[in-house]
Image (tube, rainbow, N blue to C red):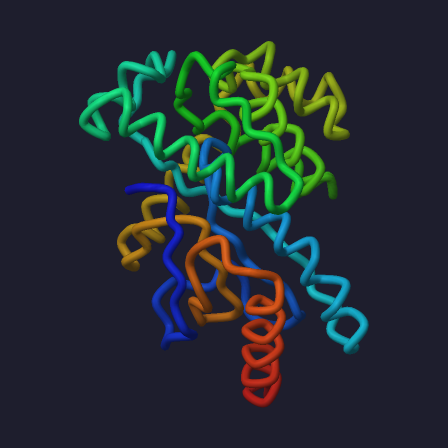
Length: 239
């Protein structure tokens, strides 16, 4: 699977809902090494106040989808891996340039030159699961994105992951305890596997209730209309 730029129209149920649609919430499937997921987060942050002004206060919740679930625990060297994937260092650099341009348009500074490794992101998703329970998921996710894409942080290193999570608002003791054990590992892997079985192939992907609304870093105004229409449909279906 690859980080996605695809834009799709609302479609019938394709991804099992993370929770029953009893409140206006958005489920977002993403990975912490997906550049388009960070760009999409910026578009979402612009869309949410517009929706709130219309009387629809949506709560975003992020869920795991590993772009590269088969990477070793220690990750891989980025330059060589991407050169193989794209066919040459030049093609890999061109892909990075496209990301950087799109990021610049929404105020993000991608420093691909600082990124040395692509990590296995399972532990990062375990931390995000804890962050959701503690009410700081968006802040921790932002810290991970900034750490990886602008600072070149290796998200596969537990100490670095913990530092970024603490910067995002998690308590040090909670993070270090989590990373020292196995808590959340089976749950993260299971949720990732479930959405793959349901047909999800790329991220970011945005769902509401049982509906996959779109995949890709779509503009904020597109998000606003998709979320508003989806919630209108779902709210009519409530018992």
